[in-house]
Image 1 (cartoon, rainbow, N blue to C red):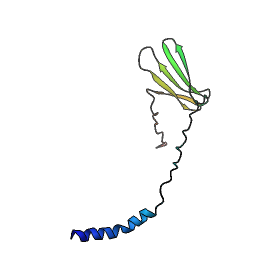
Image 2: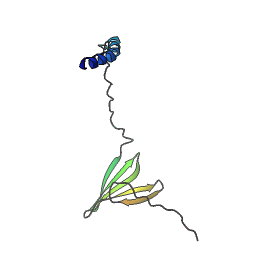
Image 3: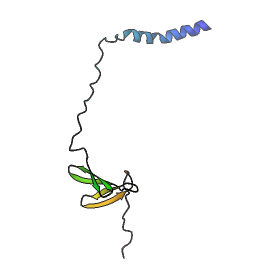
Length: 113
C-alpha cells in the first residue's frame, strides 16, 4: 500500500522536476540598488519666516510665507498662549487655543422673513 502511494506521487510530480530542470540558472549579475535621492536644503520661499516681537509683557511670534502674515502666536506673561490665524485673504483673524484644525461653523440660510 505504501509503495503504491509513493509510486503515484512520484509519477505525478515528474512533470514538475522536468520544468525545474529546464529553468535557466540565475544570472550572476545583480541589479544595482536604486539610487538614493539627495535632499536639498529647504527653499527659503516655502519655509515660514518667524519674527519674535516683545510688546510690554507679551511675546508675539509672527509667521510669514512669502512676506505674507498668516498666523500669530501670542504668549501673555500670565496665562496660556493662543494663536491668531488669518481667516480669509481679505483680513479677518480667528483665535485658536492650539495648533489644530480651525472650527468651521456652517452658515446656512434656513429661513428668510
